[in-house]
Image (tube, rainbow, N blue to C red; front, side):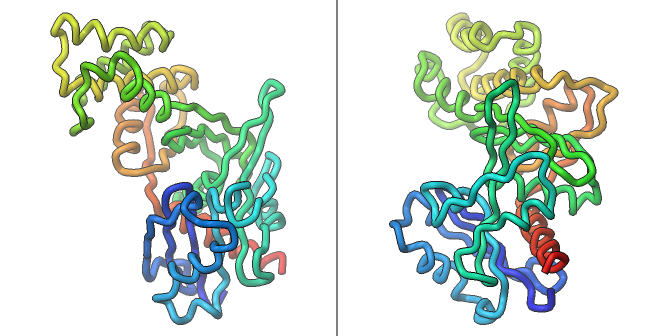
Length: 299
């Protein structure tokens, strides 16, 4: 690929674009608060044009988009690719909105115990993280509102599972009785409180029971209000990790996410004696670049 790539991560609430050079290196980045929910039907081409207008050479480049832009609420729906799925499968099922010029990366779906699970955007981060770390097999977690635990073997996503950890935290934080004793903002992470909540979640093995401890610890002045968000965060992450059955014998878990979340999950994994390898937003650009290279192979 001699002319580089326009890489776009287009989610529900924001749009990030990167100009990648002929070697896949980030030459420039730009972000906008124009998530798909703020874009009217038929306006997606205009918003993409505005996001990339500062790069005059864009007209000669392939543009790949990942994320919720490929959902039913997005530009066009990019059908899910079934697991197991690798670079070749993803590249073969791109949804082209402008032939040979602009395409949307499909999401991925799998089945577990007769129930479907889906991801859209995380698959690109998974492939990018593997490429950046030089791995073809790994266990990954992509924390967020809906955390994804992913197993990859021989360069293909074999299975994954979704945990509504971030959403449950927000519900407890803002809409339960616990909200009455919590401060307005989360503040800095308090590691001791995080660890206490994490270990309590492991001991009780029941979030419905464990969550009430945030109320009683406050009621009896056993924990300061400022420490409570960290305690609650440790608790919901503890519930998530408990279900993974992690042990000292496991290889490092690749944690893909923002610095704040990779810090918390890295701490939680260390408490279990499991190593972690953090990867940030560069995973998306690496994934889109790798998919573009795969396109060249099958062209």
